[in-house]
Length: 445
Image 1: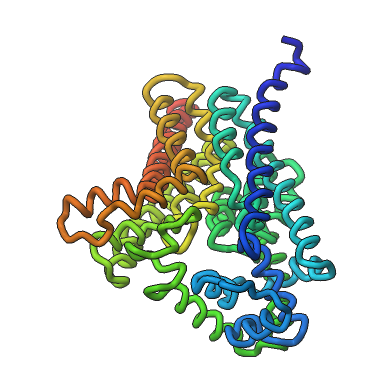
Image 2: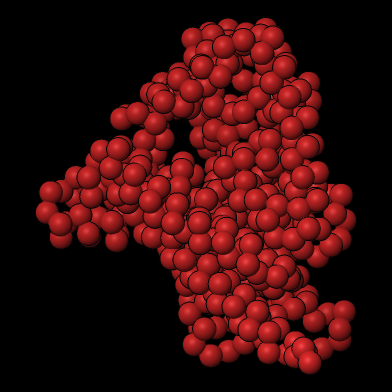
């Protein structure tokens, strides 16, 4: 096949997968009364701030919704909670404010256009790197992911933009190309959702002297943006921090949309919560227990991850391994939903690299990564959420608890397995490289 046409079938498949999500997301956005929550929430919160009211005060924000006619009739308590309890960080207002110059429909169309373009650009970069190792594996993984981006594309949740910016930043800094763009992308991601992009930033801070410089530049820019956003918010909402903590506590308490408990609507939904607390809550539904169990496991893996980074030599190959292990670990330790797991885009170069080597390691990497992509995809997650109603999520017997975990909470289990596997490979690869350098080094006379 002519060199200029050899990638055409792959590009056609990727475009088809992307088009499926885009078309489906458009139909979903028009089919849900009031629209899919995501961008509308931060749009109205920013409008509230611009009109001098406090978006972190639930009563004031609800009053603004009512005055503007944005509350739809028959709104469920869960949706009402989602729109009136504002929990986004202050810098988010800076990025949303320009869109408030337009009506919500026009603003969301523009926002979603930027989000989709950024996301597809990030996906293209990961495919290009993965295809240099294994075209088949990178194509399959990316087709699965791109055909299951309906929730991200329809609602315009900031997670989609943060995932895209984190992936683009990783490409820029690892490939040492357009590093200024990587610095800006990572800084913006940090200011909007640090719990998504924080592990990416920390890796570059620790990995090498060159990447540390870029990470510090990103942190400095993020600090400026955060300060500007905080000063602006503090004028209209001087008690925003206390109020935001109260809002976070309300949505995480029993009955809240972010509660990780066995019967939580936030877990048993198409955009389900995927942190490790959702697994341990089935074992014993007590926040002290499931938080402690999660922190012990994730804390141990985090220490091993940091230790491995400090001991390893920075290379493009082991950078992808480390980023997959770190970002998947961050999904487990605190509140995240299935759309945050689109950070699995970072696994495409790592999996393709391992798959190209052949052997048992290649098979294990491909099977596990493919399973993680499938079980965090929109369609399977929706099927799991629908099937949960038939499972004994609050059963007392250990057999029933195990069944509920395996069939009702497979997503965090696969995310955990992916993090552990890539951490193990990263440590193994780093040790092998160190031993090779030691053996090949000239002996002192």
